[in-house]
Amino acid sequence: MPTLPTVAEYTKGVDTVICDIEGTTTPIPFVSTVLFPYSTEKAGAFLEANFNEVTDIINGMRSQAETDGGDVPQIRKAEGSSKKDIISDVVENLKHNVKLNRKLTSMKDLQGKIWKDGYASGDLKGAVFDDVAPAFKRWSEMGKKVHIYSSGSVAAQKLIFGWSSAGDLLPHLTNHFDLSTTGNKRETVSYTKIANDLKKADATDSLLFLTDMVPEATAAREAGFKVMLLDRPENLVMSEDDTETAKSMITIKHFNDIFPSKRQREESPPSKKVQKQE
Image (cartoon, rainbow, N blue to C red; front, top):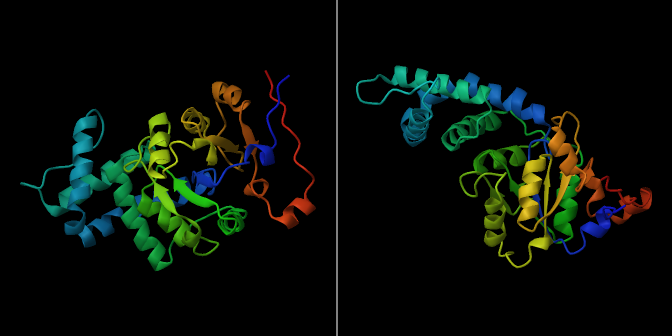
């Protein structure tokens, strides 16, 4: 019966690590129970104070709502509408799309600006698992490049890691990729674009993508990346199809297994090969 390689064997030749956020570096509940509610609760006051600075975002949300149609709350046009009415429409549209966990560029841009104020005021701290900061530091000291690829905007990503519960982690990060710069995380072409951006089109096997989502890992693997799945506390339950596909991928519970320090290697027993189940 075929076996999967050990983590040490699999990561030979890897010089670049690309991390997802939710369920990988950060507990999923942080986004759904802290960031999302904060954005909807503070949206009205933020828009009132910054209305003229976010007109492009509002226009983008309006255009998206018109395209969506159906029961999606629409946003009245500026002509003939009061500022108060438009703000009310934007807030209702935001609440609707947040409830559905939609990944919309303009919506994410608005949330990012609201969160920025929250981090700056001290209301928010970016949640990261305990092993993340030591791993980022260790990998960067080894000469590995560490990047982030998330559905959240680049601005929102930088807030989580710049204002994290473990301090400022941005010095360990090189690049950030999101939906607007790179594309859908479940499409192979997005990972091909990342490889091209990193000038790694001919060396995709030196790229390691870490995520908790099997469809994302599958897309990255199809682009030639090495991939690993994270089994973190409170991650979502996989579908039957994803569970079957995951059998062909290495799954880890924390970052300590990836490029461990000498002390970590001495304190931990050698990783065993994981048997692939047919």
